[in-house]
Length: 384
Image (cartoon, rainbow, N blue to C red):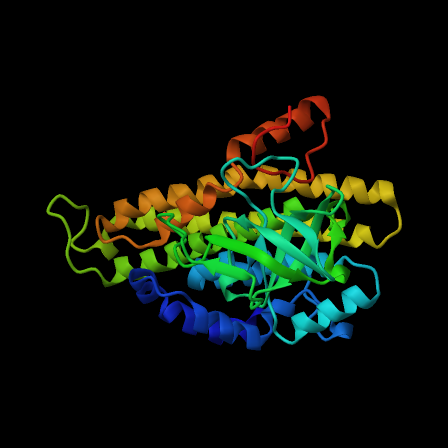
């Protein structure tokens, strides 16, 4: 399935370094992808999509990330939104959102709040304004929303309940600001979105608890695929750079880097780390695919177990994949010296999401005490 997208990925890769250096947002590249259809990968064929399994999606995301990891990160919210669509029961909501995705429309996200944010409630709220339902609030880390047609928003409902809703990106009350100032993943438009009386369709408001239950594992899968793609790009770029390099050190073990066994050992280690990272990601995707299948099997207990296993497999993979790719991003300097690539910075930034130390603790608590993993988490001031 990935073959149909590889020519586009090659075009994306060709301009990736120039975009990074010039801080040029990948607007044209994402527009091309929208038309090619990867945004509807998970929509079943019977509904006009490509019907990809989760392992197939993960493999494609690894390849896209090897071309430009900024783009995968920018589309992470979209793939998560589509995953929620394919978990919906048949009906008008599923039908009209699936049709939008098949047409090439994409969704961004607006969930995280900074400052005096709370873990148990959003300050972003909906309210009645005359005969309209409107949204007001400010979100940060709204990755990909600048490129999107829709924005998926976590908010507080009229009665104080947690809700999820979607608003049009081009609504007059929506202002997406590219003020992301992180030192990596600079082209993901992960900055601020401000909602000022943005129009909300009541039919697009659902209770937060009704979203797909393996969401935490799925969103982390996209991060893992992105890291694996960065690792693959580092492996390929390092091998090519070493092959082309003509200069060598006087105390080196060979006349050229391509003939230096110590340098070749480093290249081999980077490639092995990238291979292992990708293999682990595909294994995790299989576990999440089982959770997806269990959702439609009609056995609640089996579904809960599959969701827990998917979260645990994801948590086990996070620290290992992170360490593999970050080790590769460190030893790359042993092969290339100062002539390194942009990839290590993006890997370090991406690996800081959802801190690894919590993943090890969650896995350990399950192994020792049988404690189920949390199905979702938020950042903010604790209510306790």
